[in-house]
Image (cartoon, rainbow, N blue to C red):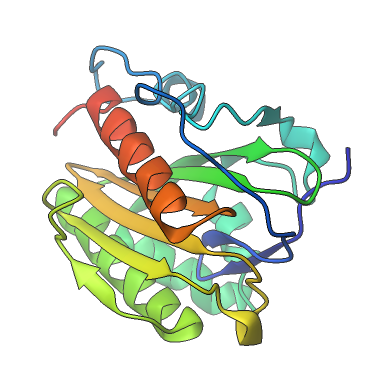
Length: 215
């Protein structure tokens, strides 16, 4: 399986070169689990990341991506930026601790991605969430909605019914960014229709937030 094409901006993984397809969410939501204690290591955070998505897309092995998915440090996230030194300083200002990234998809068709970040404080997580959402809203265009009814409080939503061809997104896409306690999550779904990708994002956001401690 060929790894999906991606672009990384401001520490957030965004899906780009995708073939049109149909991602139809299955009945039910992404796999949820009882909230656990606040992780002390990236490996403990991994246990809280949703293991499956409702569309039924297969997991992409972490090593099939370049750079690999999975555990993320300040150095990893800073390396996605054009100015890694500046990005490193910004991440330290946010109080970034570590993160975990996970993909689902097959070939160059529909894809879903989850990136869960952990910070020193809720304020850092909230500021990071706001700033990344606003940045990526500017990059991809469309209306960035704060706390839309379809998502829980503390979330932002961007829907692209026609994708964003100028930015390389060739299929409908939905992006969500949410803050919960010391966590920030980013969920992206691309492919099919704007309704199907929005439902995928809604279900994954709900399941991911349910797995996280609230403080």
